Image 1 (cartoon, rainbow, N blue to C red):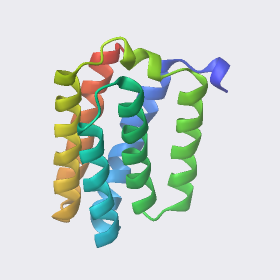
Image 2 (cartoon, rainbow, N blue to C red):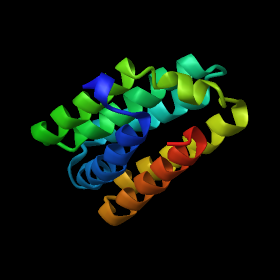
Image 3 (cartoon, rainbow, N blue to C red):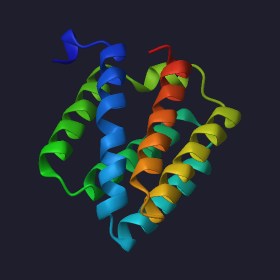
Image 4 (cartoon, rainbow, N blue to C red):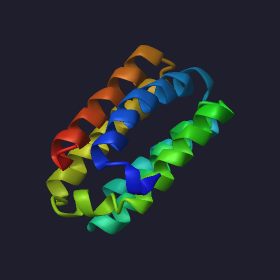
Length: 141
């Protein structure tokens, strides 16, 4: 699948799936999930290289998928993540990674967490959608 999938296709699917996951997370996340999301966003903000940022970013998005409490959505998300790894996705963002970009993306993560914590599914959906649009713009996907 990874050989037949482009970074553009990955982002196209992510822009559809992940806002729905954020929406469900706003409705279903436990207080522990929300605490973990906050910590993951903070960890991403404390990194100074793209490799560490990618690790925390992936964990952040995975935690949202898990907190949506829908096994089929989670499996789809995990498939997307596996294809991203095979596609060497990290190289796209590594080329443009810097502290300013990290701060922008972490700011998006904080907005997403805030919407989830406030149990606002519409805002969580919109925050994730805006985040992924920016990632697409940055990576050219």
